[in-house]
Image 1 (tube, rainbow over the protein chains, first blue to last red):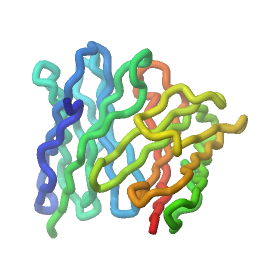
Image 2 (cartoon, rainbow over the protein chains, first blue to last red):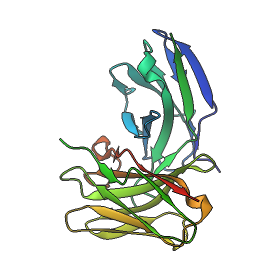
Image 3 (cartoon, rainbow over the protein chains, first blue to last red):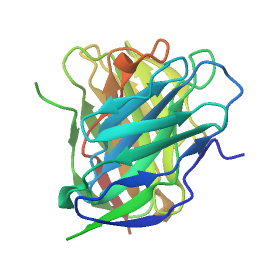
Image 4 (cartoon, helix red, strand yellow):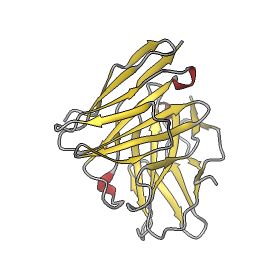
Length: 116
Length: 117
């Protein structure tokens, strides 16, 4: 079964508008971490934001915020005030605690295009 | 502070050859992980090293191997290359992988893009 599901292969947003990228996950562990990475066409994966499963508050980093709904197992990324430079592939990833698989499990990604 | 450096950035090989990719982690990072990214399979975990020991391995054939040196630099090797090995190989480093705290964010390099002809 897919552990991380990103159902939007592609998204378009107008410059300066906000956009939400969806991510749902599946784990039976109570302790886990959720990450969002951005991958521009150059290939490098750029860390954006992290949410721990025990964190009470939704994570925020500048224009990025994570809408964490634990009961629904969703961790959507919200980008406010989109910029042209935000055009990239966005990956949601999960890390389960050590003792099991310690690597990141990635979703299939969402290609975001910001329109001028 | 220098980021994760991967070399070479691009390379072309033919089937049956072998390839070695190099990764220099961020100074002080002792955990190095490798991922393969292809259009069909997405991002898949290859292996993870910590203090010169492989601690975790993904579901890849034995043709894929790696190692880590005492200075935390890592190399991965793919022998007897197949067309399906064409991919972007990403290396990532972190302080440690204990737990899942935010401090253990993986920092990725720009990748090595391998084309097998």
